[in-house]
Structure formats: C-alpha cells, structure tokens
Length: 431
Image (cartoon, rainbow, N blue to C red; front, side, top):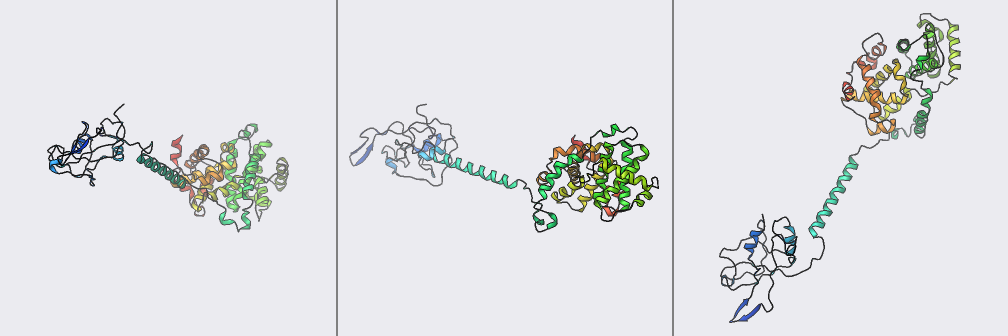
C-alpha cells in the first residue's frame, strides 16, 4: 500500500521541504516546514512499546526561542530514527511509508520556545534487498543447525572394533575372523533341522526328546566336559532323528552315542565307551554302542563340522563386552532352549543373540542392545523379541516340573547361581 513500508514501523512520513524552504532575513533563520513534520516526542508515542535508548544521538539542539515542539520537555535518552533503527522496529502496529528509508536530519524551527529534536527523512535507496539484521539472523540460525547436526552425529553410538586388542594374538586370527563368521552364517542352515521333524517319528515324541537331553546335560556336567561338546551332542541327536526313525528303547542309545561322537570331535581327553555304558546303567552293550556310532556317522555323512549356538555365543559375548555374570546367565538361558523342542525352529546364531539380549535385559532391568551387538550379530532388537520372550518363559518355569537339570546345574557356586536371577518379566508385557 502506498505510504507504507516495512522499514518504518512508526508510520513516519518523510518531511518534504519545499524549494527555497530556507531563507535569511532580519538576522534570523526561517524555515517552511511541511505538514508531515512532527517532534520526536510525538513520534515516539506512535511506536508501540518503544523503550528509551540509553545513547541518544542529537544533531542539533536549539534554544528555547528557536525550538518548534510542544510545551513538554524533550524525552531524554531518545535517538533519531534512522533506516536501520526503523527496520528493527518492524513489530509495531503503525502503517509504514514507502518513503522511509532516509537519513535523519535535525532542523531548527523558530516558532517555538523550548528545546527539542526534530527529525527529517530524505529519500535514500536501500543498499540491500534484505536488511542486514535479517541476513545476520539467518546466518546465525544456519550455524545453530550445523552445530546441532554435529552434536547428533557425535551423540550417535559408535560401533566398536572388538578385535582391536587381539591384533597381536595369533590364536585370535583377526585377519580371518570376519570371513570365518560370514561362512558360519552361510553354513548354519545345513546344521538346522525342520521344525516339525518329530512328526515322522512314530514311536517317540518331543517329550521323550526333552527327557533325554535333560539327562545328557547332567551327564555332561558330571563328566566335566567342554561346553562345545554339549551343543554338538544335541545337534547330532536332532539331525539323526530327522533322518532316521528310532524306536523308543533305542533313544537313550542314540543320546550316549551322539555324546561319544561329540567328545571325539571336541575333547582332548575322551571318555571311553565303558563310561557311557555305566552311566546308562548298562542298558546297552559295547557292540550296540559301536553299531549305533557307525549308523549315525553314515546317516550324517560324517559331517560333524557344523556351527552350533556355542560358536556364535563366544563371538557375540565378545561384542557385548560381557563379564562373567552376563556370560553365565546367557549360557543358562540357551541351555534351557536345548531341552525345548519348539526352539529348534530358530537358527543357532539367532538363539545365541537372543540369549545374550535376554541376559542383558535381565541384569539391566530394561531393553539393552547396543549398536555394536547389532552390528556383529546382524540381528536387531525387534528380530530377537520372539525368541527372547520364550526364554523368559523358560526362565520362569526352570525350577518347576521334572526337567530341572539345567536349573540345578546353574544353581551352584561354580556357575555363579545364575538360576537364581529374577527373569526379565517386563519383556513379556511388550507383546
């Protein structure tokens, strides 16, 4: 709208001096002032909420007889309104003139008798389309945004190099470790069995399998065998039962033979055949054990080199920077899964990751899965929740019922009384 400018919040119209406005006569200076001129005291009344400025700039202060203003004394502390100052007052309510971007000039008026300051605005074009304070504000906002982005990047949790401390350890094979676990992830599918393989067995069922494995966990504990041996034993049993029908009276023979094979593969000091015959209360002869051993390795095509959950447990525990307490609780949870037939549907790597995730949640009291764990396991928190909730269920029931072999094992000082840890019940409430 004509007569309005965003840089003139006070609604100040420029004072246009007529040609020849200044004349000399009688030793006094005269001036014809346009009707738009107003005293600064009146102008400041039009500026809504305009506070007095501590540094006043006054170009001309006239005597009382030459001042042209109201009878009121001038307001101290005010400064002339310039283009820059007018732009800073852009939040006022008065209409803005198009002729405002002009410098201030103080002029005398002999018609009044009190001192005051009078402003005059002359035409002047802005040197920039955008006011300088706007440019400064935009630059400041951009800098703030850049700093926020940098802080977010810094706050993001980094993925740790868990092998950095083992670069000089030849047994850690740091140069090949990532390739090894990439191969394990590809090969683990060959070590898995169908989730419903027990349906093809006519004389045994999943309950009998659970009783067998619970008993073998106690045998493993009594013989003080390596942890790898237990996981390979269960893997051999499942793969054999998925390939061969077995009658009920031979099921225990399958179990002791699978442990014998696992010991030959994993142990340094292997129990002899007679030890397994004794532990099974002489239910089978030596000949029967050796015949079952031959049948089993041929059915499995001598493939004993399979990635079990134990292989992944060691790597994932390292990624989790686990202490002894977390390690024992993780193995307690995953060994309970060995007994349960319904857990065969999960891959070994998923079982290992879920056991560590559940153990971390159990000890921490909240969901806890770091970027480093997610990176090295390749499983997110959401992918682990289904398996983890089942582990919490098993944890709740571990000391009840007849199959309590795992609970008794981990309720000893050797295993840190991990079975006494309260289960992470809050994970069940997120279903």
